[in-house]
Every structure is written in C-alpha cells, then in structure tokens.
View (tube, rainbow, N blue to C red):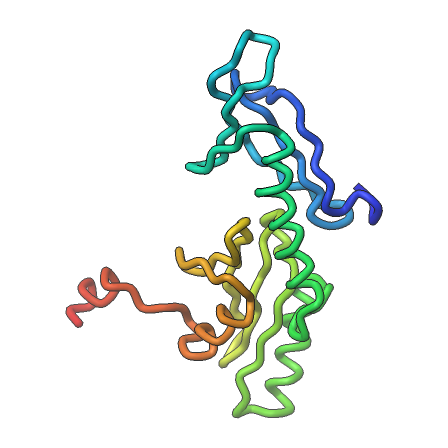
Amino acid sequence: GGDAMVGEALIRPSSKVADSLAMHWVVRPGVIKVIEVLEEDKDNDSSIGNKLKIKDEVYGSIDELLARYIAPMNDRIDEITHHRKFMDMLEDDVDVKLTEMKKATPSGVFYFLCWSDVHPGYISLRYIINTPRSHPIGISPDGFVWFRKTYTNIDSLLNDFKKTPRGPVSAESLSSRGG
C-alpha cells in the first residue's frame, strides 16, 4: 500500500472466520488495518451476504460499506493529518520533542497527535505534564473515540483533553477510591 493506495479498501473472503469478509483498509503508506465483516442472509455458499455487519452496524452491499464506513474513516484520517497538532513522526520522536519543549518552558503542558506505532488505524495523543504520556485515539465512521466517548471532530476531543489531560474520571474510579 503506497501513497496511491491510501484510503483504498480490498475486500476478500476471510481466512479466519466462515461467513465473513476481511476488509483490508490502507490507513497510510505501509499500514493496513484489517476489519472483519460478518456476512448474513446469504443466497448460497458462494455468494456475498445480503447483510454485511461491522459490530452492530448493518450494510446492504459492498458499495454501501465503502460509502458509509470507509469514506467517513478516510475523512477522519484527512482531518487528523491536516490538523495543526499532527506530527507525522514516530511516537518516541514526538516524546523527545515534547521533552525539549518542557525543558524550555517548565510550566507548560504540551501535546501533539501522531500515528500509533502499535495499533494500525489509531492515533496517539502524546502529552507531557512531568514525563511524556499518551492516550490512544480510535477512529470510527462516527468520529474519534477517547475513553469510550465518540467526538464528531478532533478539536472537541482536544478541548476535553485540555480540561482533563489524564483522561475523564469515571464513576467506577471515584467509587473505588471512596470519593
């Protein structure tokens, strides 16, 4: 998957699960995310299912799958890669830059977005308060996912991050601390 293939999806029968398809989505050059698509309501063993499912979302055809799943995912990638806080660098290199910025301005809290080195199709929100830390940011057709909340755009997610850089406090963590 070179530059020309970014955003493209190849769909083929899954080698892992019967009655499913493997959708290979080229997230960026050299990085492919494989998405399992369950097939339901098949006319026969060699046909494609009339219902295609990713998690709880149902699609009626491959064209619909590409239009309602892949196209919005590509829009999310475009939004990220053109964001002023995005750095097309390895996570470790972003951490070095954050550390340098913190040394220059010790009172500052700095952050950047970059690709996740570990999870294809994820963004890493790298930040430094005292030492470099990160949050994985999921990408879905509906938006960006941070701590089980989906944001329709990256700026709304970053606004919440700025309020609580370590992540939102859940009711469970409050009750487990007796708070």
